[in-house]
Image (tube, rainbow, N blue to C red; front, side, top):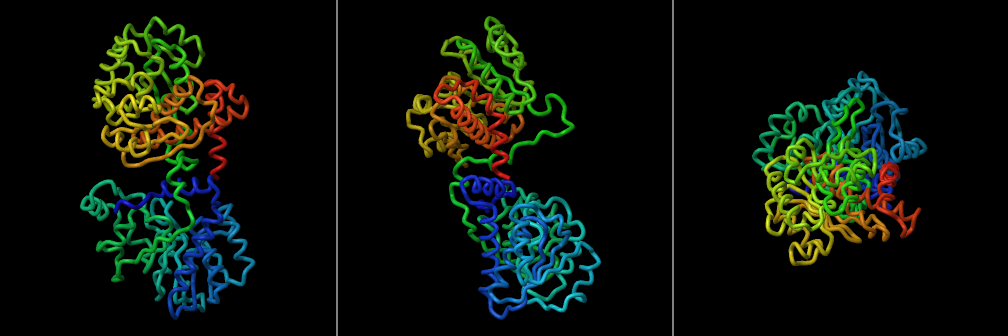
Length: 516
């Protein structure tokens, strides 16, 4: 039950696979071939009917149809919808290939056509391939898909669904809870979904099981007829392990999107608590946070240095307090907090920061603990819970007395119930359950201040995704590293931390374009 993934997770994996060299077209080719080979493994099946949609699921069906035709089967493809609406890219390319083949094609978006389909085609299928809709479905089926699914059910033939049965909403299943509660939720929330979706004899899914398939395999009734529960085959489509292990463009798909009608403050409010001994650090963290699309970032610092920090940029909001532990009321008004940039190792300041972190640990505001504030974890491990720690190798050793390899980072994150990013040539990020390696970055990023940039970037992402500290950290690390690479190209080893900040927007744009 634990080795299944959501629609978003699969989308992220595919984007990361493309980033490291496996194209969407190659993945679709492999998927369609796997479906065709499943059909070919069966006996006494000559006539194959495919219901194909306009998206990637339909694209897999187009590929399967081409292979089956080449294998000598009689193949009929029905495109459910308008040809002009077929997705661009791999799906469109495979449709064009199919049009040039000898495969018979029918195109219809008329529900009435599907209501009388058996009368309209002189074709008795031995196997039907359901490639209409995949994992991205939201809500109930709409026409003409609804009528197409109903007509599909009326044929007396074995049905193979591609990836997931059309209409099966994988996004409604909460597999974090125990099986008993999941099945209870399944019964309560999916009655209409299950009744209207395709009820196949087999599902050929790709790379990993999708959320909810546990119920297809279980004794829970999958649909309203007397069919046995479908078999499920997980097919390999060539996605390398690195697509899940290493960060990539796919890791930003989880992040909240800015709504067009949103107002100031609705896209994240960040507070930076720091700036005792070093005044530039909180300014760098704040600017990075704003570049990561948070609406508001407030620097909370001691009054004696507040004017100095404010002078760095007109974009900065700076509030001075007499002592660091006077900041609690201000901090709690924000969606995420970064504690540590520029504090230094003044014992009195650190003692006051400890009090702040202890009180924050009882609130729901997620916190990034950075720089010298990390030293407080050793004697106060409870302040790490649900938060994000950002040590480099030396700080990790000082904190835990061991090196920061992947196993140790994961174990410590699990023990402290937090997320840890151990910064280095390759960042290691773990929440104790999941682990990612970030390879983006450049040699010039060893310059002072880039750690403050990363802390602020994590804070900015976290403010918009406060329930997702691990994913926020992964996304921020990858983008900051890409920004560092762009800065290195322009400035070489002369780059400054501010150069990395200036390249964040370009890095985001490049990453988004590279994954489409």
